[in-house]
Amino acid sequence: MTYVIAEPCVDVLDRSCVAVCPVDCIHFEEGSDRKLFIDPDECIDCGACEPECPVNSIFPAESVPAQWSNYIQIDANWYKDKAGARAAVDAAKPR
Image 1 (tube, rainbow, N blue to C red):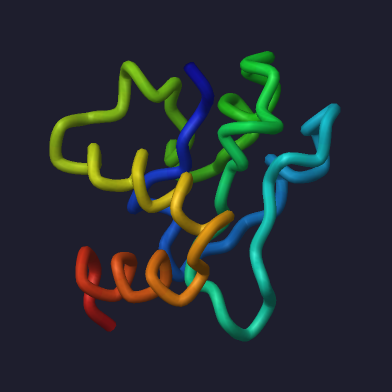
Image 2: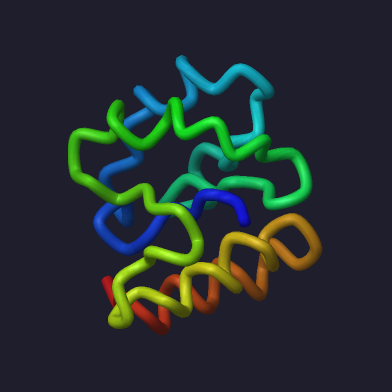
């Protein structure tokens, strides 16, 4: 399993996790995205990002709290369908 960035990151976009990722698998598009996304195909499951998140938004996929489990699929979808992932974030946490 990989790591997932859940709802606490929405509209925060702190990049501390990006700085410590050894494989650069955390992405977003400035001005378009409301949260960061972890690429499940690139993540090496090292866990370096998890303690760096100031809002406790990063979880191993198998440990994502139930109320945020939809973010597992949202993170994966962003790498295939960015517009769809953005719409899912907006639906999960309206502005």
